[in-house]
Amino acid sequence: MPDLRHHLRAALVALWVLGLGVAGRATTPPSLSIAAAADLQFALTEVKAAFTKTQPGLEVAITYGSSGNFYTQLTNKAPFDLFLSADLDYPKKLVDAGLADGHTEFIYSRGRLVLWVPKGSPIPVEQLGMQALLHPAARKVAIANPRHAPYGRAAEAALAKLGLLEAVQPRLVFGENIGQAAQFVQTGAADIGILALSLAQAPALAATGRTYEVPQASYPPLDQGGVILNHARNRAAALAFRAFLRSPEGVAILRRYGFTAEDR
Figure (cartoon, helix red, strand yellow):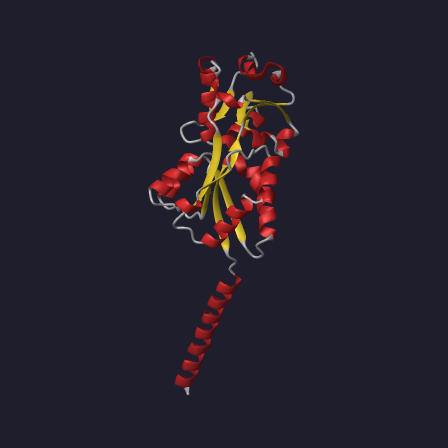
């Protein structure tokens, strides 16, 4: 009789564990993990909200940062399904390294640069244009780190092209990415920033700052591209998000944040 009770108890425990495992699998929603350039943080919030309405039950996790840092992580197979870079070079390098599917490489937008100052700044950026960087109140100028951020490289290129780099360089402060560069100016750690138009047009910055668009001819085109990783765990969802981003609805959202659509 004790043996019978022992076997019955063991069977019930096994059934409970099995049931817990099945239930756990059944309640774990499918997920999509995206590594995205920092300039996309406001636009993609809206894109994600619209996209998830078309994909009931899909969890979408987006991590923002500098494209160069993501590239380094992805060469070590960081667990992302889709990479949205602030330029095309990093996705192409991943394809060349056999880490991403070249058939999924795509351009989703073109980024643009602006000068941004808080509304209370004494720098009349609208009137001075790029010469605002030489204003006495522009003691610190924030840009993204050009070593791994495409927006930082574009900012340096614009300064060089316009003959301002030598004068401005000693006053540059570098954000880890373009989002952090924007935070520097918002918080007063810098007086003026060379930022992404998409950030400047987001409600938080648009309501609190003033801008001047950097002449597009002064820096190389910031064609922004994406690619699906070969180690993607949810390739189907990554393809669906890619398609939505390029759809009329996705393009309309990107345009509201200042992303143009040349050469798409």
